[in-house]
Image 1 (tube, rainbow, N blue to C red):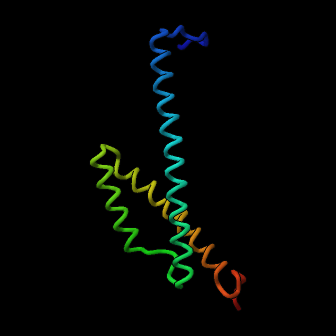
Image 2: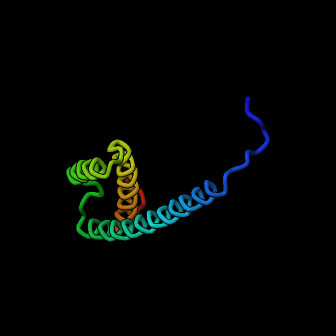
Length: 114
């Protein structure tokens, strides 16, 4: 049975926990900024694809990227399945953005065609 009374934590443990959490916060901020930069680039790709009437998705490239990221994950001692799930999520967002860009670029401006 656990006590509802808070345990006294060694100040050194508390300081180490704070230091680690500060590092995690810095890493999270870097990840957000890196994703923002990535999406700026993929937006440009979306406009280029729309301008040249290319499809929003490129399954061959996506497969190569997933394999590449899995290898990078293995080398970095990160679960490759997790890395693949993350990249699949990012790819689905990119494709969604590309579809929106293409719809706006179409002569009908994204209006449904009958």
